[in-house]
Image (tube, rainbow over all chains, first blue to last red; front, side, top):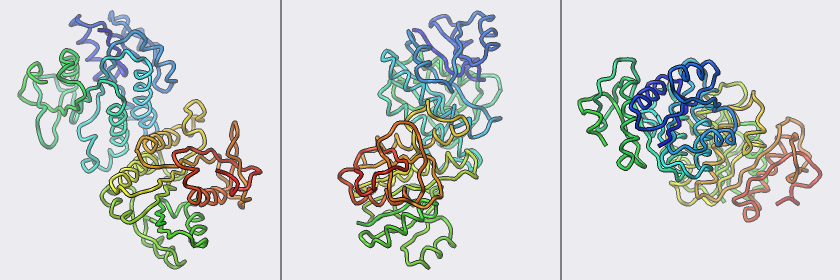
Length: 212
Length: 212
């Protein structure tokens, strides 16, 4: 499968690209925004292309030509304002979904979302604009007609991955970014069991390969 | 008809409520956010209720109980940041649409949008976050299953209304807020000709009553 990673230079995106590439079962292409990111990815032996979520749907369509799977791991990040949240987390996702719809041959669209994105009552005040963007990005994907998986991790940490998670729980929790990346790889390998589902994810005791 | 105006204290909303009330053909209820706005509206003889677009869908459902028409004229305004654009212009609209869907008896949902909201290539850089919010609010309404009209005025001015507009044009233009308010009244009177349409609106030479 040809896997296209949007937001490949993000903290989850980088680990996901590395894991998928090293595993060698899929052909992964990293979409990055800057020339120096492109050089960095290529120097590691990864396939990479330049692409901009603030560009046009038509340009995204060209970028995903020939791809089978789209993984959307982009996020404007905590250091930018709500303007970038609107442009990247919401409309960048919307444009990626539209490009995948126009492509017509995308078999799986995997979205990295956020725990409780579906439940407005759970959003802390300070994070509400971010959750609004993720909420509506998820809804657009669910209603797109594309085969999708939405992964909703809890609070992200930089701890080393444990290879173990919890996908069946009430409430909230943390999860290392590395484990989110590993779980995304697992989703690709278990497409049939993950399709058209939204999966909550925090750290836990279940080996990732035993989920789904 | 019982007409419920969300964003009634906005610059278009106030003029719309006044026109509709004075005309006397419909029963209009203004939703406002603050107690002093409520007092102000009531002192003018208008029917008004407190409501908050940052509240729950359930509270909006209660507020619109018994209504036939929803007019969404709310906007976070130019003086707030993109965080409020996400919360009001996008998610406030989304919640209003969800409340109308849950109600089941809303005959017409009228959205005040913005010229070119449907066309990403036309958005000026400085206004992009605002247009992203309006774009997705419009799409949610179009896909809601509700009978809708989306009104997309050009650049809003405080000039006195002329009673004349242009709904068939290329490019852009200005329009007095008062004429937008008058056009919204006209939309309500011509429900059959306005339903499930998006209508562009700038100032022009056609009397409003001759449009639609």
